Amino acid sequence: MATRTPRDQLIAGAADLLARRGLRATSVRDLAKHSGAPLGSTYHYFPGGKSQLAVEAVGYTSAFISRVLVRELAASGPVDGFRSFLDMWRKIVTDSDFRAGCPVLAVAVEEPDDDDDAPLNAASAAFDDWVRILAGSLVEHGAGEATARQTATLVVASVEGTVAICRAQRSTAALDDIDAVLAPLLRRAIGTTG
Image (cartoon, rainbow, N blue to C red; front, side):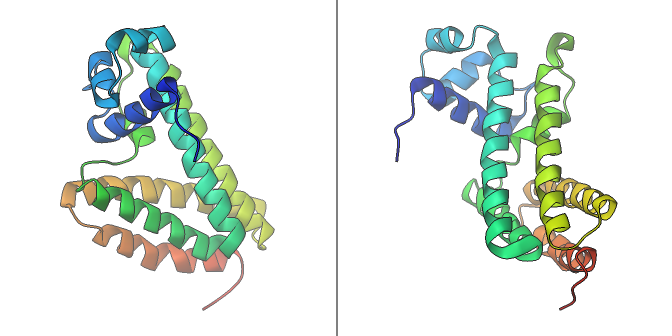
């Protein structure tokens, strides 16, 4: 496993802290402390401050989730790939004792600082990428383009919202609930049953 650079450490730490606190409740000082980095190095690597670091953290998270989606969908198809995706989120919320959610959602639902839309734009790009990946798998397995896009949007929105519910309820039961509804929907989208 490659060792992380100090810059990579800051980005990973920022993603984790944003998943726990959100953008508005997190300062650059908090991000540096959480990452174990000196405050000065934060500004050295991210002269754009909190906004730049948030954009990088969202990109980091997006790339990680995209890799998981691509790998699981390629290995198992849309239904089992979706279930592996839910398992990933179960692990994230339980390993953090229900304190961490998705930093992309955290950034997406907050009013940006000083009318800086860069973090929000990064979140939009992340959601678009996840929908595109899932829709592509659905099309590859027989769904029509429109059905694939609509179904993928529903799945991404459902998972993101459900992760928030899991945090609030301190339970993963909501993930089981959406699995029970969305897995059959995915099967219908690709024309399979069972």
